[in-house]
Amino acid sequence: MLIYFIADYLRDPELQLRASEDPVTVLAEYGVALDMQQALRRHDHAAILEAARDEVAALLAGSSKHDHHVMMWGTPRITVTSVSPSTAKVDSFTPLTIEGSSFPPTGKARLSFRNEQSDECVDGTIASVTTDPHGRSKLLGKVKLPRSGQWKVSVASVGNPDGAGVWDGDFTVTAG
Image 1 (cartoon, rainbow, N blue to C red):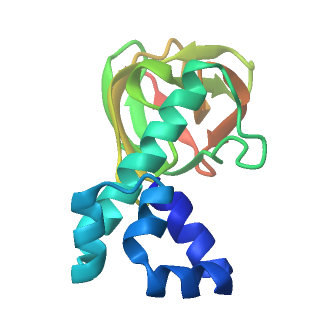
Image 2: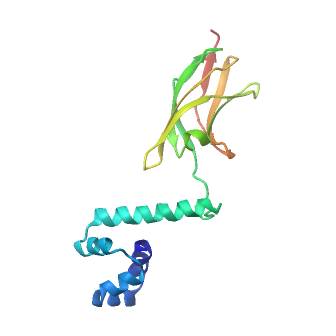
Image 3: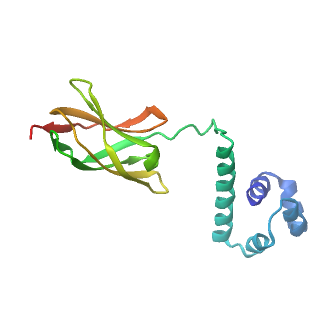
């Protein structure tokens, strides 16, 4: 695999020497395909990065199929940085845009509201969750809350409610 070759090459001076003397043999030992060998010779960084990304994705996909968990990575830290709008009327559906980082995908995310006075909890409805390559997330959804007051807004993974990101601000619900 290309990624194994790159990792070893960067750390092993003996491999660097062998690869400079006989790159075809060394790359073949790592199972690097001919087209990728040519990309390495051309210094085609885009092709090399794409192939490395694909190999890492394939390794992670294979790992998750066997229910392995990469312990050193842990779970991403979910944060909620904004909720818009920050007010709603009692018993009215309010469309929401919630921004933050590392939100789980749509089917695995949970949007929750907790009343600060009564501790009553209500789940919102999630329409979509998008996360860019830098981890910045946007959740589109709606909620209908049954009582006025201050509510805390949180986003969590369905499988890990303790890892919820909670918005520092208050979501205010007023009488209709």
